[in-house]
Length: 276
Image (cartoon, rainbow, N blue to C red; front, side, top):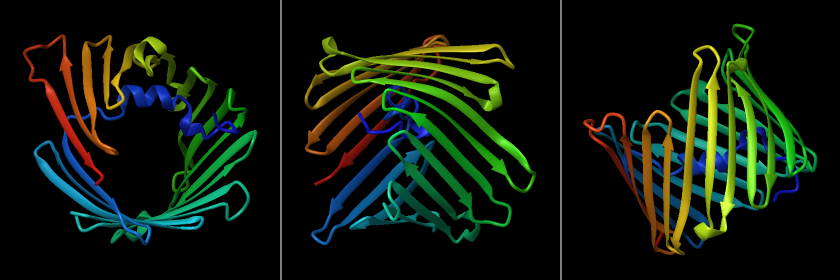
């Protein structure tokens, strides 16, 4: 486990990743490579809803600084610069998307043994200000986050929560949407699944009295193959298989079904990630 409480955005991350990461109804191919000079190159081609898109990116890391430049098919250039430990336990991230000069953002993260803080400011005339804080230990942490809109002088969001973490399990409770929703999640590693885990998540939106219960699991078939599945009380079933074709190269096939409307066409996704 880490030496501090981590960021508030990481509360419940393990459960969220098991239920959502790598599930997709799109088709995507990613090819990555690196040179002796330390430059990492990545190209992506995706088909989403019948629309094709792609990007080419380069990342260079030198000492405690990292530069990431991405060229998208929409003729956008996204540049991100991050510097770690320019002050003790502090990381700064600056990003800008061209030609939209007003889309820049500056973020500062501070990670301490018993606390963490983040602050982000949009680089435009009426910027939004994001900030979050967490206090505690690697085992138990309390935190909150908020977004303040300077143009209107109002808070667009504020969330708070608690996170409990053990080597073989984790749990979190998040009060979100300005107090209109609450989400509980629990994940536990299971030896019988050979490194897999089971997870449960329950959310409630008070304004609509809507409840959603989702359960999921992961199962390690062998060192190269992973199976995942999830189902919620609305009848939405998802499953995926991920196979490591060669070291750091993966093929992922996923599907989604509405068990209460079997006449609807199931959705399938395919992702191929190659790193020669």
